[in-house]
Length: 282
Image (tube, rainbow, N blue to C red):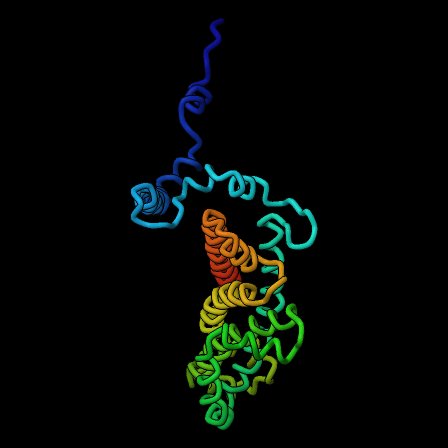
């Protein structure tokens, strides 16, 4: 009796996992194109630095400069005080962003819904909202320091006052854009305020609310970096960059900027993912 090899198992050994192959086929353009774009930018930057066309250190300085290389590969060290690794500085900044942004989201959504539902409130406060949202984050820093006399609450206030306006204005616009037919149906069915809120208002305004939230998370991150730069003695990635500038550690400035951009990108992608998850449930 002859024993043969199963053709199914043999083909499985020769064929790569179908899931990985399918994933690569569907996503390769979204991966290869950015890699070429980023690689081309880094090459141009390094050539400009090497040829003396700019005084800004090239990307290779992240590895050739000993101090910067240590910061790159050891981001978790803590020697006490303000002498910390970049990860700990980033966590200090993110903790402030989390507090200020959460307050802005709660207040902005609540006030936005109230303004969107009440035309009299809208007419009364819209000019004020439009005026305040034009004030640059750095302009709020001295006002916050006078108000709170302490860097930590002042920084949280700057994040709050900078990031609240896109949330508030977009939420109000989303509520105003609820189709009149939906309102009529709610009246015919004699919906309670709670049912109208959960089944009509929130699902209809949700895309506008998340547009405001996505814009605001970027503004909150930019605001805390600016605030930390001008608030001495405040641990955070903004302080790290300013300290590196004062000591002429150009490559460390570049490393700090890379951390800022990477964290900002992650925050934006997290907000996009959250929007898709919540929208799918509505």
